[in-house]
Structures are given as structure tokens and as C-alpha cells.
Length: 132
Image (cartoon, rainbow, N blue to C red; front, side, top):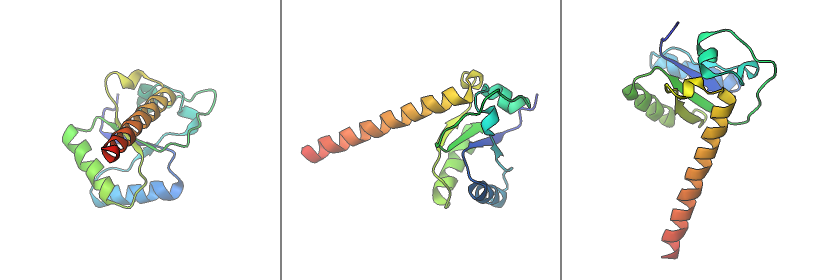
């Protein structure tokens, strides 16, 4: 089983993926691995460790960047570096012992719900401050 650290990306155009890979090359990191639509309903462990495909494609317009087996310091460094670069703003997530067993499609759904809840809480807090 290949447990080498890697980045997995979802829904990047060819141009965005090329820009990301060029940026990663500049900071001496390996290129990212795209998750094909035909593999989107598979558990992350299968996407990472096998060549299996699902019977139907997964569709989502969200951009997602997953960190697999990357130390916490590396994750923080990469997120900060991505923010300072002219790259798409995906949903970032770390593959955990728990999430590696989730189908990627369900993980994306969960990440979108989580992001939307955080954004709503920020809007509510900002509205409360402006009302005060």
C-alpha cells in the first residue's frame, strides 16, 4: 500500500491543474492527483490505493483539495502558500483515519454543508456587530 504523502484535487480545469502543478513544482512538492468523475462515489481509501472505478460518475461544481498523509506543518504551509498564489480557492480537507472510509461524494457533501454553516455563522456575527 502506497502511503506516500499526496494532494488530491477535484473539479480543477486542465489549466487550473497545470497552474497548481507548476506552483507545486516551484516549491518542490509533487504534483497533485486529480480524482476522475468515474471514481467520485468510491471510498477515499479506494481512490488512494486502487485503480477501481464506480458504475456511475459523480458530479459536483465544488473545488476540493485533499491532503493525504501530509504532516500538519506541511498542511499549514501549503494552505498559506496557496492563499498567496493565484490559484482557485477550493474546500481544503485532510484525509483522516475516519474520512478515508467515506465515499468521496459523501465527503464533498459534508464539506459543503460544513462550509455553508461556517459562512452563515460569520454572516450572523457580522450582522449582530453592525446592529450593535
